[in-house]
Image (cartoon, rainbow, N blue to C red; front, top):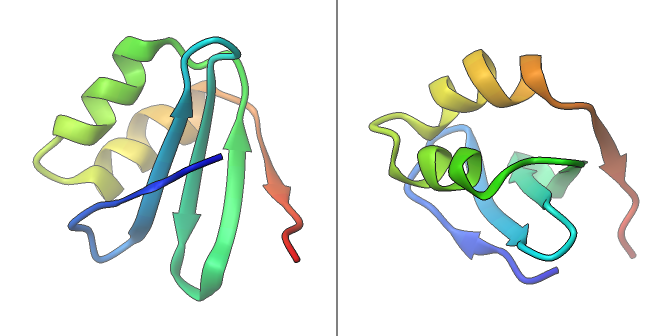
Length: 72
């Protein structure tokens, strides 16, 4: 999945698949987590939040199941 770099001290990049409703979040040290069944409105809220890290921790992480993606 293609991810977009964002201005955040916690999150490096974010990607979203509209068709599958999958959100990918890349943190420092290239740790990537994939979250399933995430509505587009939550992705848009994350991308427009004043603090993406805070939004992720208070909404996304608590509301959606995520798993680490093994890349390489």
